Length: 264
Image 1 (cartoon, rainbow, N blue to C red):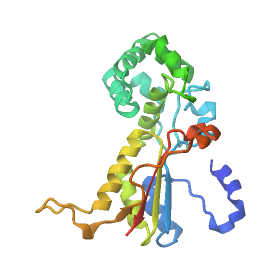
Image 2: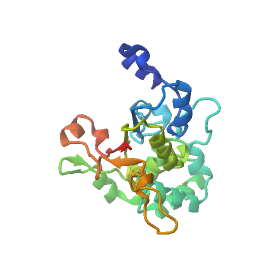
Image 3: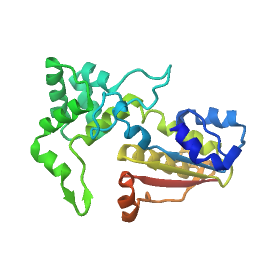
Image 4: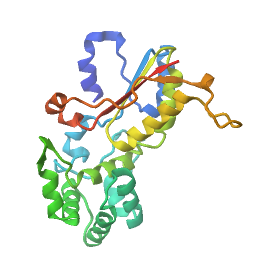
């Protein structure tokens, strides 16, 4: 992904600097870059299409590959894979992961099916997990997931399970609120923070954190926000969603939600 981005941004020369890191390290990255206070920060929380499209990364049930799902496979990074999660975690933990991270209504049924399957043989590939989920939720839901509704493709039965495992493996939600707080404080006065999220769990955290910072700290005596402590002003009361024309051009943008704020 870095190599691809480097080629795309080559014309900008030294104006574009690429760093291998994550949003949780934004304060250290900005300090090391010695650029002062940024005039703008764009946080795109989505998964790289370059990773999704590589079968060996194991993110997509549309491509056969090992159940990996680690975004960072560099030495020293997290070693737990999606295969480890589905084959080693208890049924209760799996159910919690599917329900909390995938918002999967059939979490208990799918978790039970995973445990029953691994008693016979381990779950090794994306195909194994996809077929298992389809069997667990029933053929009718699989067909509904593949049907066209109002010109758009509805969610496949395995989508939420794969999303939940990806979030769990990469700990995507842990520290997101603190990262946004860091980003807001790093901005120069009148600077912009723009955040793009791709599922309701992320968007909920972004929405609440931005709203809280726009209101200010709560006075412990009165219980009311202190306006003088406001960090930002909201620029988007509701998330901006992609236009139908963009979704037709780029189907992966269909779930994107953009929120923006201005540093006070």
